[in-house]
Amino acid sequence: MTPGERSQALLTPAQMARADAAAVAGGASGHELMEAAGRAVAGACAARWSRRPVSVLCGPGNNGGDGFVAARHLAAAGWPVRVALLGDRSALRGDAAHHAALWEGAVEPLRPEALDGPALVIDALFGAGLARPLEGAALAAVAALRERQLDCVAVDLPSGVSGESGAILGNAPMAQLTVTFFRKKPGHLLLPGRMHCGRTLVADIGIPETVLDEIRPDCFENDPALWLHRFPKPRLEDHKYRRGHAVVCGGTRMTGAARLAAEAARRIGAGLLTILAAPEAVPIYAMAAPGHLVQSLAPDGGLPPQVLRDARVTAMLIGPGAGLEERTIQWVLSALAAGRALVLDADALTVFADRPTALLSALTGMEVLTPHEGEFGRLFGGAGSKLQRARGAAAMAGCVLLLKGADTVVAAPDGRAILNSNAPPDLATGGTGDVLAGLILGLRAQGMPPFEAAAAAAWLHGAAAAEAGPGLIAEDLGPALRPVLRRLRGPAEEN
Image (cartoon, helix red, strand yellow):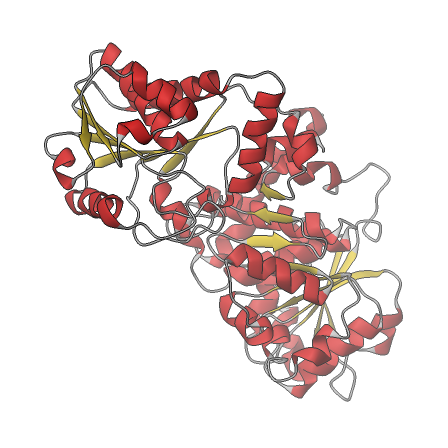
């Protein structure tokens, strides 16, 4: 594993259990790992809140053991602590039983009444491994916690959130803070679970990073550490053709989409950008920006053969504003037959809704597909979590797929996946998806591999949106990208 993969790895609940077991097998004490976990929870509470009454809701497993440790440390620091346990104390086993025995205070049954009086609640009922819906006393307690809108700290994950998928299993509290251990889980990032976590803090409890070499996770949280080593950087000897020639196929009616994508491809570094358009739309595109080259489509409305044969054309984008027409289908199939690095977005995907096999059978592996949920459903259907569906579709298509949303997933055919978490809600406005497609196009035109290009574009898209801030419209993303790229490059590379 690369250092970036180590730092950004996301572990499924099963993989986290393997990490715990490997740490113990390597000489770590289970008692000490649980002690460190509970101490981290108590420390996080003390760092965010002043001393106040707190109720600790403990479950029957290791998550509950972490809760007993947190209760002990908070009580020792002078916090008024109340502990409620799901089940009998005598039924606890292993490390949880050990730390429950160290708690010298009272333990009451888990009931909604345990929430009477506290200003803060620690949810230590169930962690990331919960696989079935909450029920009984746990469900009643969580429902009461949500109804009363008490401040909540979740241990590992809010109880009721699936660590695997982010799904809500019956109910789940809305935590202000979640303290997890060693590495995040997919459920911390996937919706709707992410909305229940509040801020997620990852605590080091003494599990060595070397356990990841055996586990070999294949899912990661997006960060430049994963792809910066493949990110194209201008060199002194470069010229415009060496930085790639990107081509955007422009529609006739919704010309803004292609123009937004074209600007994004140039902003991210493509040396040349050509928009192909019908003769009647050429003046519109020609006036859009002086740096855009504009060329007419072939007389039959198809892609010009000379463009498809030109080895200097390094990547193409089809879809934004293209229209749901037979012509769009022919554009896609012609570009695929020419073996181009290709980004397919929007209409270039929807137009195949009634004939998905025609698209899937023509893909070569050099493409990046960028559907939103509606486009994805029309092409692939399927059930399961967003992560599962994206991985399945990438394997079916044999190419990289970026499934858009607040929890964007980038999936490769070999099963690798990256979850993006830096996109602010301001991006939910028209045209921003066209900008994202253009960013991928520009990176692919410069030779960045498809998986890394899609991940880098998603991260940069979110970072530019955060830079632009409230009031964001799609046109703001290009200018906002400049300071993001400046920081990404760093002062050493600017000298």
